[in-house]
Amino acid sequence: MLGKWFKKQHPHIYVVMVALCFLPYWPILLLWARNPERNYRKLVRARRQIARWSSTLAGFRYLIHEEERIDWSKPHILCPNHTSNLDITAMTLVCRADFSFVGKDELLRNPVTGLFFRSIDIPVNRDSKISAFKAFKRAGECLDRGRSVVIFPEGKIGGDYPPQLCPFKIGPFRMAADKNIPIIPVVIHNAWELHWDNGVKYGSTPGTIRIDVLKPVYPSGQGPQAAEEMKDQVYSILNKRWSKL
Image 1 (cartoon, rainbow, N blue to C red):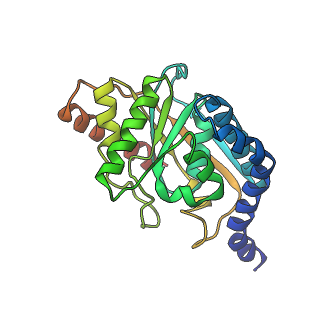
Image 2: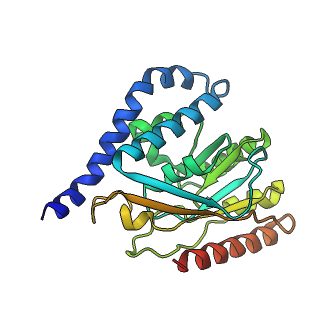
Image 3: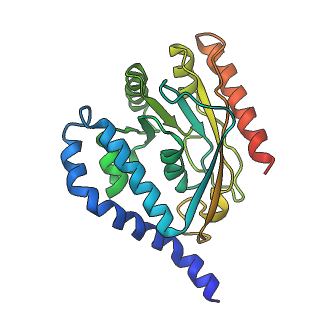
């Protein structure tokens, strides 16, 4: 009985830990966010520290394995599967370069993610083609500056439980093909088992989240066909590697 009660309360404990770790940074983050271009690296590093400490206090660990050594000094597009709010923290710890998330504009309403999405990240309204165009234009500019971009290619957390890999959006693959930038597939294996979606429906529990950073996939050329081929290739890779566990 106590275990069930704790599992139901643990998502709220995690939110409290995030808030407690965020609050000491809040004044300086507000200052840095006034000039995000100048303070980009500081904001990225502060977010990484908040993510690491809040996860530790809530009992989450991340076991990250790189299939091959990644040259983080070069820009990449990282494409992970998406089953949990913990995936944002996971990718903050996975990507050791300066990077921006491309994510749903609902994150602007969250006090923590909102600060970063108003400064260094790129919000997108999934129902607006104009918003999507502007978002991917900003993401392309980010890559041109030598920074990486993290995009969840499913565009959402699916409603199935246990989760299945949802169809991919074409946006990140079109950008990769147009700019000749490699995509790094990332498999977040079991975050959903510990904390599915926002954790409220099934509760959550502390534990270790296993992550595989796979070797980069390079576009075969430019244009729509190359983007489609890359999308299918990355989907197949993620689906097979995730299914193994």
